[in-house]
Image (cartoon, rainbow, N blue to C red; front, top):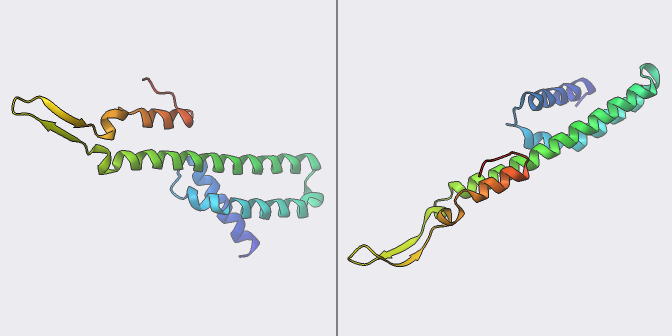
Length: 134
């Protein structure tokens, strides 16, 4: 891939992330290391020709910050997917309750959702920094 196409690919991914579009975050995360190396190499190559050392240092720090943001968002996304899968799993709602003829419970194995009462979601949201009223 030539230099201009690579830069456009990176710009496109960063624009999506800045807009909050995480549909391709996993792909961007997978390429983050490659992109960072490419951009750092390009900065070093051109630094002496048109950037002051202070400007290039700021750009490098900005790139590192963006990669860290991508990594954090990917981790948060993975945690949200994990909890959504648990709540979406039919077995989470399966339990076994036996009743007698008078409507009294004889034996009960409560489904995980009854025991959880939303705690798993609250825990994940807390981990990613979202405040939830309990």
